Length: 53
Ligand SMILES: [Zn+2]
Ligand SMILES: [Zn+2]
Image (cartoon, rainbow, N blue to C red; front, side):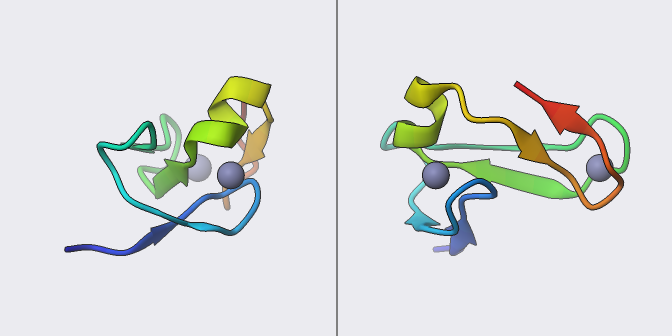
Protein backbone atom coordinates (compact mmCIF):
# COMPACT_ATOMS: atom_id res chain seq x y z
CA UNK A 1 0.00 0.00 0.00
CA UNK A 2 1.17 3.46 -0.82
CA UNK A 3 2.50 5.47 2.06
CA UNK A 4 1.63 9.07 2.15
CA UNK A 5 2.27 11.83 4.61
CA UNK A 6 -0.10 14.51 5.74
CA UNK A 7 0.89 17.80 4.20
CA UNK A 8 0.00 19.74 7.33
CA UNK A 9 1.55 17.69 10.15
CA UNK A 10 3.81 15.20 8.37
CA UNK A 11 2.18 12.11 9.89
CA UNK A 12 1.92 8.97 7.83
CA UNK A 13 -1.65 8.49 6.75
CA UNK A 14 -3.67 5.58 5.54
CA UNK A 15 -6.22 6.59 2.97
CA UNK A 16 -9.67 5.32 3.78
CA UNK A 17 -9.47 5.79 7.54
CA UNK A 18 -10.63 9.36 7.58
CA UNK A 19 -7.62 10.52 5.64
CA UNK A 20 -7.77 11.72 2.09
CA UNK A 21 -5.48 12.21 -0.84
CA UNK A 22 -6.17 14.36 -3.81
CA UNK A 23 -4.23 16.16 -6.52
CA UNK A 24 -3.50 19.84 -6.14
CA UNK A 25 -5.88 21.78 -8.40
CA UNK A 26 -2.97 23.85 -9.68
CA UNK A 27 -0.04 21.50 -10.17
CA UNK A 28 -1.43 17.96 -9.67
CA UNK A 29 0.93 17.22 -6.82
CA UNK A 30 -0.61 14.51 -4.68
CA UNK A 31 -1.63 16.00 -1.37
CA UNK A 32 -2.45 13.89 1.67
CA UNK A 33 -4.33 15.05 4.72
CA UNK A 34 -4.93 13.15 7.91
CA UNK A 35 -8.26 12.96 9.66
CA UNK A 36 -7.18 15.24 12.47
CA UNK A 37 -5.99 18.03 10.21
CA UNK A 38 -9.18 17.80 8.20
CA UNK A 39 -11.28 18.07 11.33
CA UNK A 40 -9.22 21.00 12.56
CA UNK A 41 -9.51 22.61 9.14
CA UNK A 42 -5.78 23.14 8.91
CA UNK A 43 -4.58 24.93 5.86
CA UNK A 44 -2.20 23.35 3.44
CA UNK A 45 0.25 24.80 0.98
CA UNK A 46 1.25 22.94 -2.14
CA UNK A 47 4.69 23.07 -3.71
CA UNK A 48 3.31 25.47 -6.27
CA UNK A 49 2.09 27.84 -3.57
CA UNK A 50 -1.57 26.91 -3.78
CA UNK A 51 -3.30 27.25 -0.41
CA UNK A 52 -6.36 25.28 0.48
CA UNK A 53 -8.72 25.02 3.40
ZN1 LIG B 1 -2.22 16.00 9.60
ZN1 LIG C 1 0.20 22.69 -6.31
